[in-house]
Amino acid sequence: MSPDLENTERFRSTLERLADDLAVEAGDPPGQFRTAGSAEETAGLLDSALQDLAWGRRRQILEALRRLHHGSYGICTGCGRPIDEERLEILPEAGFCGACQREREAGAEARFKEVQSDEEYV
Ligand SMILES: [Zn+2]
Image (cartoon, rainbow, N blue to C red; front, side):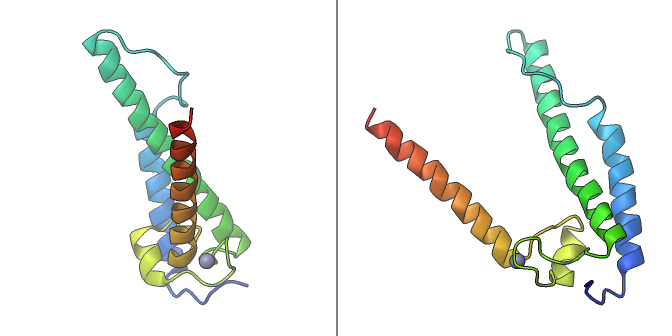
């Protein structure tokens, strides 16, 4: 069940354009972890970190295109409710509604704090 998105075609072309742009930006697939030594190597690491980011986003964009293809674009993967069109305008690859995204981020933060407080007792 797809939400009645008037601009589905526009979202599709935006996503396809982003995927193409990022394919250029991302270059080769994410490399293996390297240790930094010289300034050149550090710059290389930064590049590869940016590339990893580009790859991560591209993966999400391709996922969104897949959802578009299957007619589930714009539906929250978490709660199954439609994602605000305003949100999709800003983040066309969004797979979660704002509420679910906040919940996920809060969960990740809580887990991070748990790890931190565990470490205090080591
Ligand atoms: Zn949701």
